Length: 138
Image 1 (cartoon, rainbow, N blue to C red):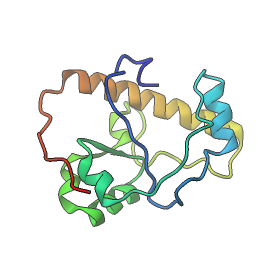
Image 2: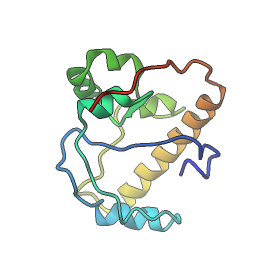
Image 3: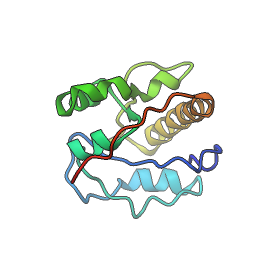
Image 4: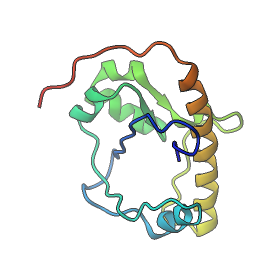
């Protein structure tokens, strides 16, 4: 999705706050992405941890509870943590979780995420303030 929007040089990593490592994306997620030419069939979940938090330059969460979890892991990380919908002109608050809903809800959530990511990419293009941090030690 980022490459389509002209931000292919950005490295994106995904992690959840209440998942098990190694779970595949839901069938509806795979279907919705595939209809847009994106193959996420190989995606596997992983749990957010302190190494991921401390190695990030920017953390974008899907909801307030996710931000709370980031703050529990590393309170200093809240300084570079934002809610995805902060980049939406029309939606605020949490990105709805479509788990258990029908395909139409997954389409709606994809559309919301796409709008937010487009604005995020535009904002990153003009951003001139990445802070330099040491890489976390393993």
